[in-house]
Length: 135
Image 1 (cartoon, rainbow, N blue to C red):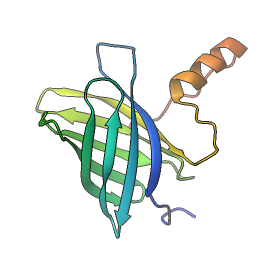
Image 2 (image 1 turned 120 degrees about the horizontal axis):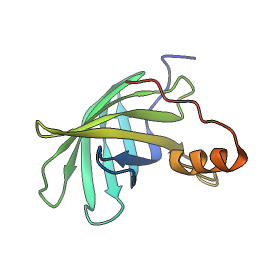
Image 3 (image 1 turned 180 degrees about the vertical axis):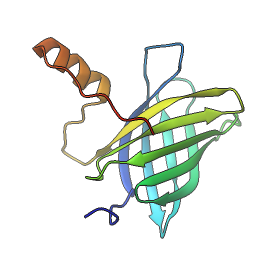
C-alpha cells in the first residue's frame, strides 16, 4: 500500500539535541490537503505552541514549526515508515543547529509508547533494538 499513506491525524514524538541524551516531547496534529501540510504542535516544557506549514508526499515530509511566541522557526525533514505509523528525520535551526526527531501516530484508545520507552523495555528484557536507518 506504499504511496497511499496520509500524514493527517495526531502524532506524539520526541526530538533530540546532539549534546544531550534527554529527549524533548511534542504532540502534533497534521492536516494534509493534497500534499500541503498544515497543523499545530505543542512542545512539552517551555517552548509552547507552534503552527506547521510544509509539504508531504509519501514517504517524504518537510515542514516548518513556527512558534506562536516568536521564537525562530525550526525546519523538519523526514520520512514516513511503509506502514504509515512512524515518522523520523532531522530538524534544523538556523545554519548551525540540528538534531534528530521521531514521531508515532496516536489514535484514541491506543497506548502510546515512544522510542525511548521501547528501548528501555527491550534493554530490560535483554533484547536489542534495531537501529533506525539514516534519513
